[in-house]
Image 1 (cartoon, rainbow, N blue to C red):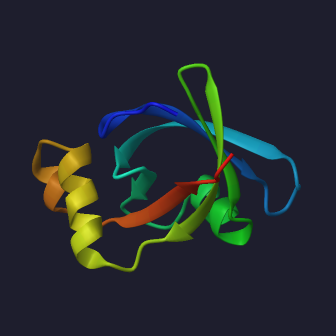
Image 2: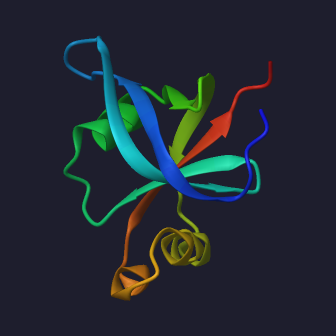
Length: 106
C-alpha cells in the first residue's frame, strides 16, 4: 500500500447490519498517518451504522482493495484535524463524527 497523506475519493465497503450483504459507497476520505478517516456531521448514514455494527470493512482505492478495522474516533483534537484536512472552507470548523479505519496487516 503506497498512499500519501491527503484527501481523495474512495469506496468504503461495509457489511449491512440488517441484510448481511456488502454495501459500497463512494465517499471523500482522509488518509493520515497510515489510517483512513471517514466523517459525517450526524450519525444518520448506513455506512457509519454498518461499520459500527460490523467493524470489518474494506476500502477500495486506485485498483487496491484494503481490508481494515473500523472504530469511532473519541479524540476531539484528531476529529478536528481530520475535518481541517478534508475541508478548506467553513465546514472544517464543524463538529463531525469520525470513523477511523486501520488497515489489516497482510
